[in-house]
Length: 195
Ligand code: GRF
Figure 1 (cartoon, rainbow, N blue to C red):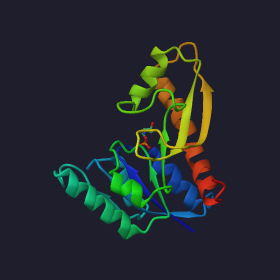
Figure 2: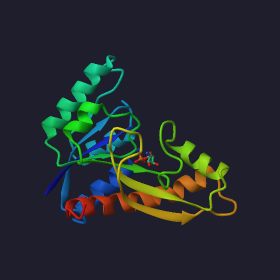
Figure 3: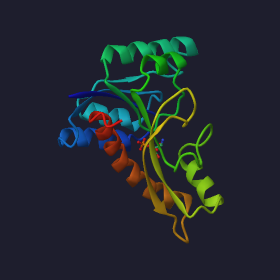
Figure 4: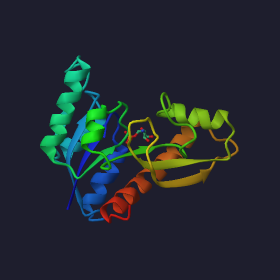
């Protein structure tokens, strides 16, 4: 059974999709821990509700970035994950963590990488950029995490057609539904070692 550690920063709807897929045996996996860099992330409540170990590792608790990174690495090591999923995680992992878990960290991004991604492209900003660019298509991407920002090898993408009267909010909602689906498909691919 695949041991998955999930890193979050917010509402945790992608985390919930993973939890549900595990509990419904869609994934032969178990979420063994959730770590947030935001103290009040609702995703921590989701973990608590499902009896999943959870922790806050962020600036308020560890103001020194080197200590914070070391604590995150130690916490991850304690969990012995086979896979780390960044599910709406808005902090950059240290090179030491990426090296320690090379090839075992995946991220979900709410655009068709390589468009509308990289530093500063997160949350609603991504969808505002798509609308401003008058793109005909948008969608979501599951990719491996490497030393860059949203630059790792792409595992899976799914596109949708941007509507005539689309707003950033309506696009975000539609893309989020794709995220929840392809994140599970991406983990399934990882599980089957198709990669
Ligand atoms: C999602 O759009 C995700 O792609 C982005 O953060 C948003 C919130 O995700 N990185 P979640 O509801 O916290 O999983």
